Image (cartoon, rainbow, N blue to C red):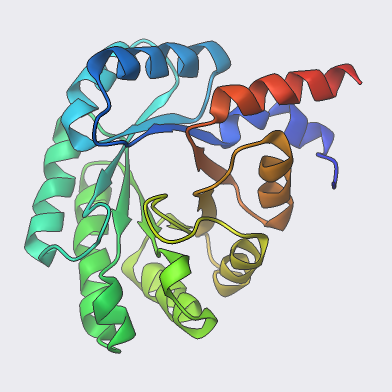
Length: 232
């Protein structure tokens, strides 16, 4: 396993979006999620839109950002609905929005629709000073489609491209992170790896592959493993 640089070790907790997107998530679990995020100083807490107002209240006095999802997890909503959803969640307190692309439209080669879908959500984010991450659901795409999707995200003005929802047939892989990193090379767009990141070793692999943000529900376990690693 590649080792982290001193800078990566210093900022390790800032790589993480502490995530709970299960449909049966309860308020007590969301509250605990926020407490853990503040304790470890993660980059953000990522929850479903319903919980954005609660998370915004709980994190109000902290540096941890409020992250939520739009068009989740399938990406097949109408463009106008995604745009409206993005605006509403930001007004409720979200500072980062992870949207799912229209995967079927991409596979049909309807690139104008894919770009417009991204652009309309990004537009709401930029108007309201939020950041947008574009979820590609890489397990459903060919490598060529992944590159095309990255270019659409760049054209649409996204801040990140993200591998997966965590609800698809597969999660982040080193290959996909490297591919996405190469596809957005020369731009300001960053790469978020999500789905299946369960250990410190997984996290290190994704960081070394080029991810600057990691989405996982195993964040506390990873931080505990990281702290044990530092003792060695």
